[in-house]
Length: 137
Image (tube, rainbow, N blue to C red; front, side, top):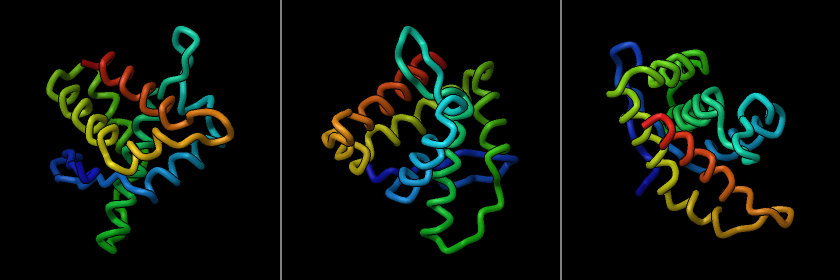
């Protein structure tokens, strides 16, 4: 997969492109706010709903960068979008698809094979995301 998908925010189709810049921005943000973007469930770290929103927001900003347009949506919009998925079956399916696109993106898959500081960082990220998407299904 090429790491691209779309979602609907406020009646507008919004492009989400997971790529190097998106992953870099999310990683830096997660370093600073690990306790906000991750939850510990059964002794394992997984993305919180706000963490998922941040990941999608980073993908949106990356898409804007590639298209050379100014972002008009903020983390708040993506957080609202993710929170609606808690009780909306159609949105849950869309969220699961977004997370699948992220997990299957070739750059993310390559990161899964790399080790950073002796720990398989990306595997933990994807594992946490996958668990969260299953929990919302």
